[in-house]
Image (cartoon, rainbow, N blue to C red; front, top):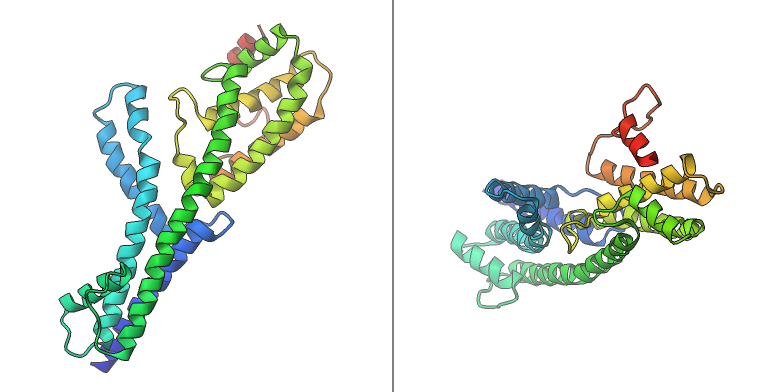
Length: 298
């Protein structure tokens, strides 16, 4: 029986440590690190949302529904972590208890985790476990509270650039529309400043959308806005300027293109999205047909 209790206690410790590491990896670690527990929450809720999308008929309806996906997923992380920690401590209370029933162990774990204090253990070991569980519970809540301002700060900086792009490129943004507007204003030479600002934007996107990976799923306030289509429009514009438009060569456009595809590749790597890492022309196909390019030139 002692061996069984030791094994159960070790299992409880492992569950708690795994959950704490999951929270640290998701919220604290300043680099792109995938977490299985957070991924399970997001994928499970995504399946639920997919069932609801079957009853929609327009993009606007789907967009209104999917706007709730990322916030709800983010909020579900906290109860998921708390439930996992509580379950791990239930196992530890049972392993260190004497005559308590499983229900009593559950009450002690819930009381300690939520700092309610209505149930207590009988031994010194259980008292120490209660203190540690209460500390972990408070830390998890504090981590998520501190995580949200960083998340929404990065979201606002991303969307500011996306919204400002509508003035220059329309909605949804188009490379041809952007070049036409700059030409009408006799401002084609001012594209240099745009390449500078969007190079910085791509660098920030690469960092924030891997270290704060939930940001990828946060949709823009307007249904015809998207950080993905905005990035594509800017890269298309830079490519047209460097290849087709008769303006003085600006190497900053090349740097913007490189910053863009590096950022998008690293985000794709994080989410296991396949792409060709070394495309060659004309052997490998591209998504833009020759007819589309000729129409853009006209």
